[in-house]
Image 1 (cartoon, rainbow over the protein chains, first blue to last red):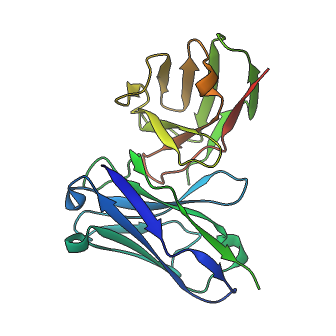
Image 2: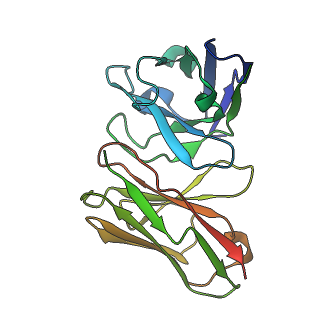
Amino acid sequence: EVQLVESGGGLVQPGRSLRLSCAASGFTFDDYAMNWVRQAPGKGLEWVSGISWNSGGIHYADSVEGRFTISRDNAKNSLYLQMNNLSIEDTALYYCAKGPANWGPHFFDLWGQGTLVTVSS
Amino acid sequence: DIQMTQSPSTLSASVGDRVSITCRASQSISGWLAWYQQKPEKAPKLLIYKASSLESGVPSRFSGSGFGTEFTLTISSLQPDDFATYYCQEYASDRTFGQGTKVEIK
């Protein structure tokens, strides 16, 4: 079955760190760029970060630049998001999302179910 | 940065209605636009890419049109399963989403 499964979310205090993971299955993971997209409670969608098939191209939204780091391990079919210095505004459901090609700005043709990150003291 | 503006924010309609949602970009994005459907507590689902290309498995009652800065998602005959929130997304540069349009039962 083609799917993405996120994990690693939870409750964390402001200023702390958290690492999200996304396990891919059912497709050739290293053929595709991957992304993180988030959705704050009751709000719309916000692209967070994207990484090319070989990790040679990495982009971030301005809102997370310098605090978040995206990475991937193609041998493990896994995508990661290291989130440092978290703020209340980072509270959201974080989706792992696959691109249709190995790089470039693109749409997202496969989504996971999301993992919830709550930043609160 | 490219801004994406959807209208209306909420749309009330009945089963069988033809409905249209508009998405405007703050600058030209050529045809680099996608549409998604999201139901409560579910992940978004890709409907349309490259402004008018239907994703595999998506019913043909969904269609997209437009180029440059103005785009439209049309549902030709609204079905009960179509009541949801719809988002546009540009991928010319920033991967910016519109704010969403909720299609609700009239």
